[in-house]
Amino acid sequence: MEIKNARFLMSNSDVSKCPAPNKPEFAFIGRSNVGKSSLINMMTGQKKLAKTSSRPGKTQLINHFVINDDWYLVDLPGYGYAKVSKKSKQKFQAYIVDYVLKRQSLYCLFVLIDCRHEPQQIDLEFINWLGEKEVPFALIFTKADKLGTNQLAKNMTEYKETLLKQWEELPPVLVSSAENGMGREEILNFIEQSI
Image: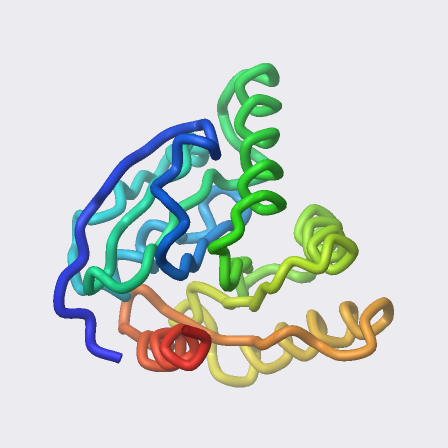
């Protein structure tokens, strides 16, 4: 799939105010600072489409982008560690849940995992919750440029083995690097085949 145009449409914290669910939607979520905004910018070929920050918890709203006038790319707030108050964290966790469970046009939720770390409890809990709720999702291992090929393979194997203790089969797994463009074609092909 070629991205001919990508533009920001709207931000909000209320699922009922999201755009009309008349286009397929692909949302990105992950722990704070997993590289979500950087990945979105790499995929769309626009360096400043999604706001990036070295400060975890920058994204605190549901952000909709229109891609090729055909589908929505959605940037969701990160879960887990973020330098925000407990009250505002609970507030945006609530609308993440609302969005994930109520958005009829959500085709796939991409759960981003930092490939440099061993399986994190918060990611595993979130993945298992998605399974229980039967939400369609795929995993994207980010920051692959930060590891050598052997270490990357080792970390991913460990992750898959951990998941297979509770799952009969794994969700789709993709690997990316916002730095060198790795995974861009695979993610866009996955989206194209899902529409």
